[in-house]
Length: 148
Image (cartoon, rainbow, N blue to C red):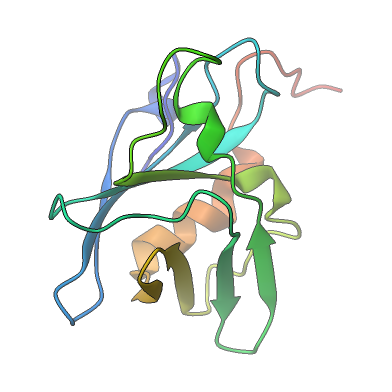
């Protein structure tokens, strides 16, 4: 499953659907940060599907694997809008995937802990979603030289 935005076939626009079993649902997308006034890099954007969930714009997203390795992804929700243009939408949040180093194993189950204003919600990723996160380092990105 490819999940990145861009011009090559490996960078198609797809979304994930996340559900925690308690009725919380999020749409997720991995993409390259588009606004020139913010640092370049891969981002994970989460959007609440129910229209009522308010995602936190200050706390980090935590990703853990089944062996206890943990990654904290900085919150970059301010990048959801161009600087000074509008308020950050309450139902959306964005996180820096370049902090996902080393990349998680494609063979281990992954769990996302998402900060919301009502506390943290937990989501288990599918094997395909875990594989996408594992493969992020090998996907060509605009503005990078794979030969470097």
